[in-house]
Length: 431
Ligand code: UD1
Image (cartoon, rainbow, N blue to C red):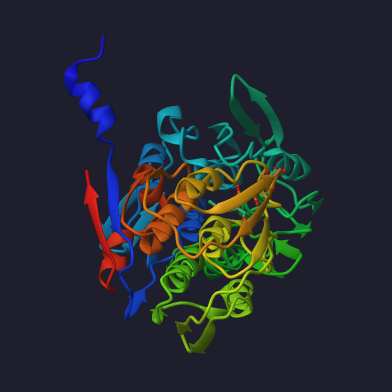
């Protein structure tokens, strides 16, 4: 029988209280990219020399990856956002299930472990709330490079047959431009014998970031950022010092926060070209956007309805679909938002409806009739980006919203409410 203390804990889940209606003004500095950092950290498994990574964000997902790398035998030092990873001797080629469970990016270890040691055993990352998220493309690519791969009892076991334990370059054509699979094959093939080509590769900036790091480590990769990537295998890689790119999804989220509160805001330390599709959609719905060097200023006007379809980069990112949909709930007119990447990424719709949004869902398409205002309500974020979307909705809703789902939020946003409060919002965290 649950104790009173457990019941009380269940009722009082960690949450944010968001006071709606506060205008924002000023500048927010963007942290390093979560999705880049996670994969770049695993690239340190490819060499016995030290890799220094700067601009790593302070996130629970990063802590999860640190724990996995420590379990594999990587020595890690940290000073603020700078980490040094040195995989002098790898103790283990199988990260423990308890650490892997819940951190999908842990699967990234398979490529470098296979490339460096010739064997790896990684528990399947499994499905998640936003969709099934298979790893079939990763496995197909590893097999093409000569690995023997089997999935038994929920663990992917991969090994390189033969004495040399070295993968062999191959020509790989992905069925879909998977970000994770492109990263896995990049890391597996840099130490392979011969040339690898990846066609229909993902073109996300995080792929370029990984290729840039690997090239600084002595790899020979060309074409990253485009649909065809060529990797000439090298014998060994060495240490280096590298700075992670800014987080384009965090940047987009704060630009949408400005638009939803109809506030002028500047964000700094970004690469504006990484946000082209998002900036275009913000312009289309009536915002003025000024970019200067590493800064973007947004000056919202009346927000008008627009249509959005998520696509692989350079299209509109799925990771900003939920926040943008929150913005469109108060736009003038009818917007149509279609999710094309994940099969189950519309869970924020029901929560937004509870805040007074007028949305009809047809499969993975949301038809949003703009309303003059949202009204505050207790809501629950079901995944990382939908929790951010709930907070943004709370910023504009009348009254005080209670947003749960902070375990998701803290995975991917550094000091989310602190950054918003520094430009005028009033958000309080209850642990
Ligand atoms: C990465 C990002 C995630 C982002 C996504 C799409 C990280 C840590 N995460 O996830 O934030 O939402 O890119 O931009 O970088 N697919 C297959 N077979 C496969 C692999 C993928 O069918 O073997 C499908 C997936 O089910 C999904 C689509 O391809 O529908 C995109 O997945 P993918 O690009 O692999 O995303 P991730 O790398 O998991």
